Length: 410
Figure (cartoon, rainbow, N blue to C red):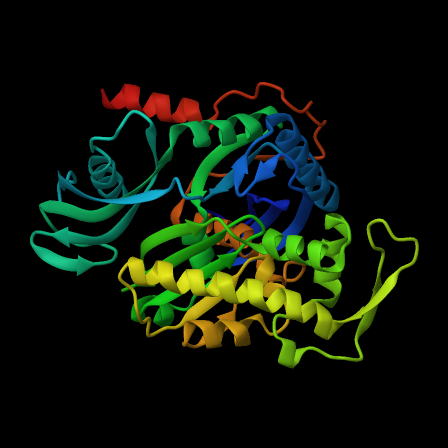
């Protein structure tokens, strides 16, 4: 990538759809535009209403476009969910260049060779991520570019997902008038922003507390080893508040964001607020302590489930501890509660970029950083260009790219 390149990420979540525009300047990334919209049509990370999802995507894109004054024509899309799986693979090629120096073309070919695996018809390859390279028997090479060799191998894992879910996501984005530059695994992207190199090397659990689901990812020896999803999240906390305070769900969400605290012992008795109750004429006053008595048990349950799931996956202890991201990580004292339940060190990750200093932006910013590091395809934008109509056929979509690649391979 060169200076001035624009990268656009689209993070389609249960509660919010976020479009983030980043500009590459040397080795640095600047966030120059952010757009968000309510995630109508999405439940527990899955699309349940295409028309509403298209409207949410278009609203988020429009918001980001107005902020920067450009028109977005394509974007990188984050993808996650319990349909995602990681599968180990191995690729081998002969080095092509006359002087036997390994270049980008050789690396591309060996990664393509690792893609040749048997997959069920309902699965589709999202990405291939190298674990390490082997040059003429020499192992544990992270980047073989410039080395001399005859035989290049790669140990990689193939990220696959449900063909139905992927195609529904692709259809929504393209109907919103946006071409898909690529799909990026959200936990992998989040790790580039939320985690340090030492944490990823020692072993760390990345816990994304989303609205409809909680995504757990384990990084060890510098790579993503496993990822899974629990069907609980911040919406369950909101529902508990709505029932406990006898108020509407929308009001409960606002109460949680403005007055919530994850620990009863950390809440302030003097912090009071009024709630309009269902079926009542007068508002009733509650304290932050009252609210914490509702929030803490549900979060305790979520962290208990996180711990049990990690133990089932074979990770009883992680030397690097845990890192929390997502909208649920914004609750005060959530890290202290997690430390008790997970019996390990816990911190909350916040992007260090102006305008997105919020844990819920980790995935979107991570997609931009991941693309800047690993991809060379540009995201095209046209400054001050006429707006397209949502749902227009832009051509060259992600599905077409997949079909073209298979045609060339065959």
